[in-house]
Image 1: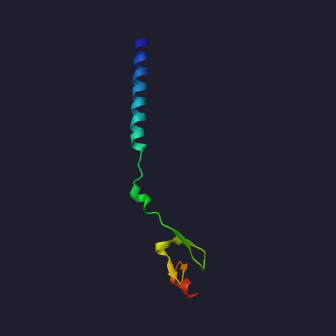
Image 2: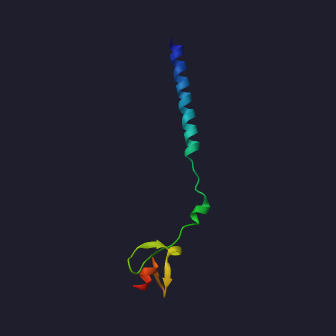
Image 3: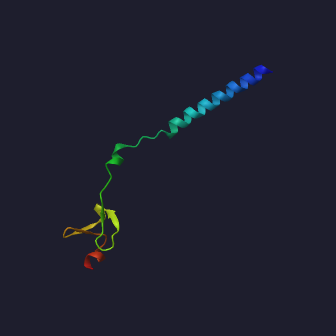
Length: 73
């Protein structure tokens, strides 16, 4: 009887260790360096104070705007 209990504990422990090793390989994600290079400066619209990426902003006379309508105001 004790042999069956011992065998059950050993099998259970083996499954537990196997699952831990399997989860560690799935959860270990590496952030590609190319995503780090895509960070962009944020600028604030002079009219409404909304922050937006520099590439989406309109630069007029050294001031940033979020849309064409705010440039005309």
